[in-house]
Length: 107
Image 1: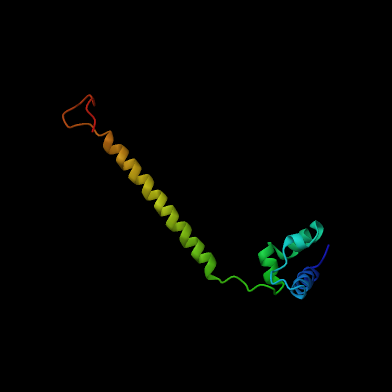
Image 2: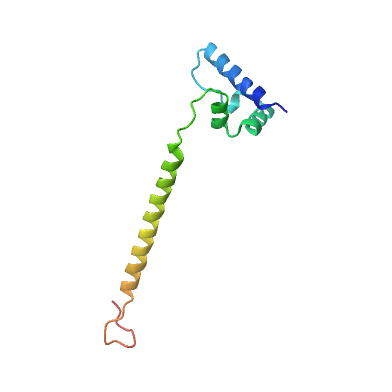
């Protein structure tokens, strides 16, 4: 199995090769055989993080995780508000008319 330094060196070499051939993209998994991809991901983590650790791609900003968290919170609040509104509307429909003990006339 390759070391982390060897995996980073492979990524940098592939990037240099791509640049030399006129391509401006980062190396992708398809550029390597399966065993090499497994080694790179085992040592350096998910592919985008591996590119960051190899020094090819700028690291994600720290605010990304916080933005994602706030987005999930907003979505959860919207879902909860919709559930409450639906439940409240359903309860109003089932409210008996005052003076109707049997519940035959429902609003």
